[in-house]
Length: 522
Image (cartoon, rainbow, N blue to C red; front, side, top):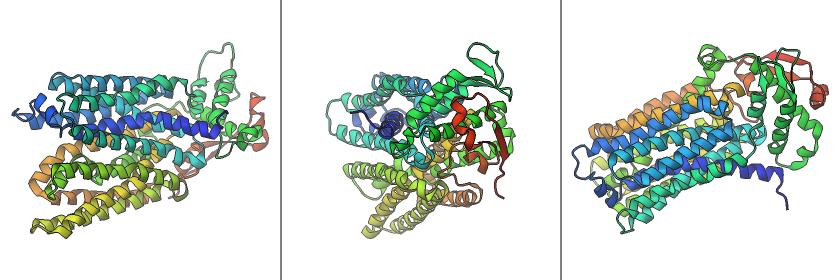
């Protein structure tokens, strides 16, 4: 029995999200790896005078690689297409993971972490990009939320695998096998991604040329844009393949499909005529606003302190008096909440809206940090079982807010606010903010906690509060809008096609286009 189009699209979205799982697993596995006695002994991290610097490099160069990986998508996603870019990103990550598992010295391991970082930086950009471009407006939030769900599945899997191998008394196998697993997810992704449909938006954008020599199968339309009409039909076939709404009735309505496709086609033609360059993202006000919104969207959640709580969770629990096994169990339990929270996020984000979800989540995280600070201040005065329990409670409540309202929403929002010709570039720059902020926070945390202890949380509380005010005043809502309609809230010129002529798009080569300029509300 053939799968329905909507079911097939969901399976495609989940399969592509193996790249998300890869990111979560690779980012997480190092935390438990550093707790494995055999790993520490093999690389002599317990006796080297520069052990602290080496551990800092293991974390820092991974984030640095991620930064360069996401920036690589500025060109690769447009030159190669979304699928091929995913293929090569998966390949790089597979090689990086394999080299980590086979490392024979600390230099090789650190280089392998950097290489893996490049791969996962590209994957964490390309996955939501692909998902957003094949998703219908009404359920785009849910589908892109699968990126968050699968990312957290990777985090959780790494935590439990690390815990399980903690009890393995087999020398190198204790850390090499968990590291080898991180090569599995991207290998499967690379093996299958080229069999998936390319996104119709990229197909159309690549088949539409602002200036090109006329030849077989192409002709210039009345607006001076060279169109390859045969290949536009390929784009329509791709569009039809993935465009079904929650029921498949839409697929049987050729007129409705053509009307939707007409709007998409005309908008992309119009955008290509603008001949936007990379620097126009910074030069033009409505694109510059997108960059600011996208960058802050990815940075603000990191400023809540989530990276600190996760990566230094064991130390936090140790300071509360828990033994090693209890620390690992609490850390595993904490991150295991995340996939379920992200699933809830996906179910409600299309109804509640992106900006409202972000604000609720970040405010909730700030309040949890306030509660954590109060309990830690009480514990500083002496042992207090109630305060210890409260401290653990606030950490778990924190991840509840973060996973349920923030995690998936950031990728949904950042991936949908840029127009097709510059979407890969804009999303790459936005997600680079995630790696830059993570790098700064993780590198500064040890010194911060060593010098001022729990008061270091006050830095996150104050900065995040400023971020909330900025987001409330500056961020436009985009729920249930098509990727082309979103341009209106940023002040773009948007192509509108007369509905009576929309169905003729597949039969006629010239359709009158009306351009209307919308400006963002003050």
